[in-house]
Amino acid sequence: MTKLVNSSGKPKIVVSDIDYKRLAGLAAGAVSRFPEVAEELASEMDRAEVVSAGSVPADVVQMGSTVEFRSDAGQHRRVTLVFPAEADISANRISILTPIGTALIGLSTGQSITWTARDGREHELTVVNVEQPASTATV
Image 1 (cartoon, one colour):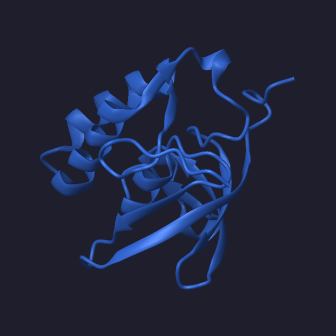
Image 2 (cartoon, one colour):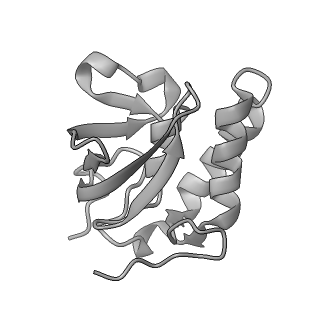
């Protein structure tokens, strides 16, 4: 499988215009409380290819997507990417304002990305499957 990578060494990502607007605003508003994650989210939005909401491929991680991924440690996880107020780790609903949430946004099935955990260690994850919520699923 071919990995599409941009000049920063990170994989190409796609974000809907709706998610872009909300996430750019969220990053700007969160910079004083969560500076590292907010700056990383802003950086991801800066490098994203922004397309109309109806043009985002079905296998791209968007807000509300349920994502199955594997880590470089061999762990498989299935999570739903949500806004901070909806986060509930016991229900596998992870906030976009976490290092792993920010790493997932915009990736598509088969893509991998290296991300830095809050403890400073680098990890790699690979998206195995993406499911969209019924309200945004492509027909």
